[in-house]
Length: 68
View 1 (cartoon, rainbow, N blue to C red):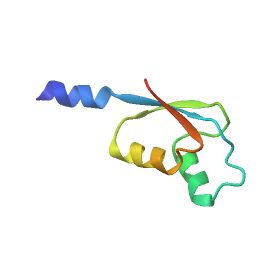
View 2: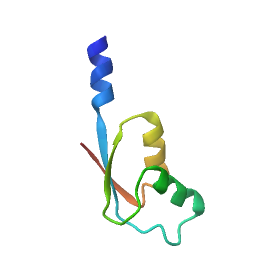
View 3: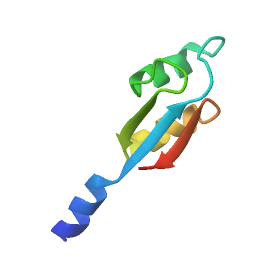
View 4: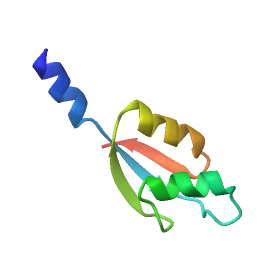
């Protein structure tokens, strides 16, 4: 059981900003900023959990997601 928990915690998603936040609604800009993205083509690694998946769904038109 502990092995499953440790395995789930190590899953990461590689998220890259591919579109500008200029012209986007303020809620989407705030989501991008909360994810730690500032410049186009900047990449961050975030944990694969429900909160991150919700953020990804909200701004999916502006980002590219890969499994790290």
